[in-house]
Image 1 (cartoon, rainbow, N blue to C red):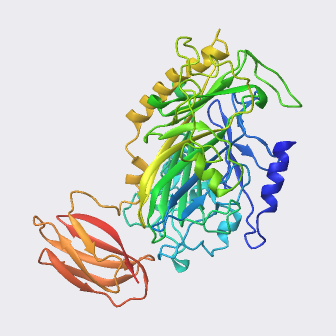
Image 2 (image 1 turned 45 degrees about the horizontal axis):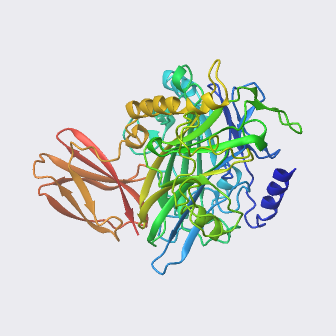
Amino acid sequence: MIRFILFSIGVSLISQSNAQVISQALLDLNNVEAMVNDGGVFFNDHGNADPGYEVPKGSGLNAIFALAFWYGGTDVNGQLKLSAQKYENLTDQFKGPLSTDGTAQASTSSAWANQALFSVTQEEIDYHLANYMTPGYQPSSAIANWPAHGDVSVQEDFYLAPFVDSDGDGIYNPMTADHPCIRGDKAIYVIMNDKGDLHASGGDPIGLEMHYMFYEYVGIPEIENTTFVHLKIINRGVQTLNDFKVSTFLDADLGFFGDDYFGSDESRNMMFFYNGDNLDEDNAGTPGYQTAPPAIGLVSLANDFESIGITDAGSTAPEFWSNMNARNASGALWEDPVTMTPTNFMFPSDPGNVSQPNSEVTLANAPGDRKGIANINLGTLVSFSEYTFDYAVIYNREAGGDNIQNASGLKNVADAVQDFFDTTFVDDCLLQTAAIDELEEVNFSIHPNPSVGEFVIALGDDFTDASVMISDLSGRVVMQEKELNSTETLIQLDQPSGVYLVHLTSDGRTTVKRMVLN
């Protein structure tokens, strides 16, 4: 009942002008059934205010009630800019992209009010690639409606969701074998921002655009119980923020929420949750895991956590910001209960090692409803900058183990998942987001970009037989092919404001780059 009240309060805070409808989809190919929505509170069944992270899939048992991301930093005057929400969808974070003109305004396109969430499987992509040339073939809605491009008429970025540009023309066209570029065997892509409305937290908006890719693999035993999250943030505004934090809020209810413990592992960049005793009971209609309950954790795979602890923030920006800086909501530094000194990592000891004094087990704490926060310090967030982050939600329940052994064994799962990630990804989706992004073998740049119609095309010293042609996004040629006879060539283009494609050919290879006219 308490959790339902929290959701009801959050919904009431959404203004009439926002009027965005929340879409949900299941990520459910492996042993986890995770509910993802485009309201900004993930792994939660928004419509019923219920937990939405069932593992094992089909068991009716949930290990997570809610996951959300918080963002904050201070401007040159020391003023806090912050976007954070816990259970209340669409209160600090909203659907769709921002404008790219420096004002970072929420998109005025009505399309995003209906849906900012897109789900696709690798099986659908494979079927598309096998059949796109078949007469009468029509791509599935998942392929056809992939949000590869924004609406440039309302200043959205032309390139949004990653795609494989098979014909190299810079334009997403499934009928030329273009297709979504995803990770895993199923992915859900969500595009959000923090400027769509006033913040219920009271925090001043940042001008941040957030792209989430939630994904899972099937048939790989060591990650069969794992859900991955790839996050890209883009500062669409002109302000620079200092001490910028990207934080993960996790309310990890393992079955019954009232009997859990919390821990952190600095060396593995992991926060984790486990049962306070060896029996997770049913409670008020919530089914428990019963004997030998599992443990669950969240790992940062590519960035170090600066601090991990239990969050006591309510719903205001100063309280969120305190937790994001290893402080209690009141502003007091987190304190190590053993040494009575400030700490950045709460309960860092292995619960299964009795010689380590600083776990909730060895301290004999009363179990309860634990909620965690894990913080990454990005440092300075400059205007128009982009950053990526990768996370994994992991689970452990060992045959013959108990609640403590399951918690202690979580570190082995974290190591296996980290190894899988390290040997699998080289930002492949980002590199394949249209073949227009710089091919290293063709040394070619444009400056200034954006421009007012006069710009320079600069080539490397080793170019031969180079020529350039410019088209608009519809494919219409706005500048006929022109030979380039020097390393720097001044181009004057008298065309309306917008995004154009510069096609440069050298030694039989063609590279295409975006150019923006203001």
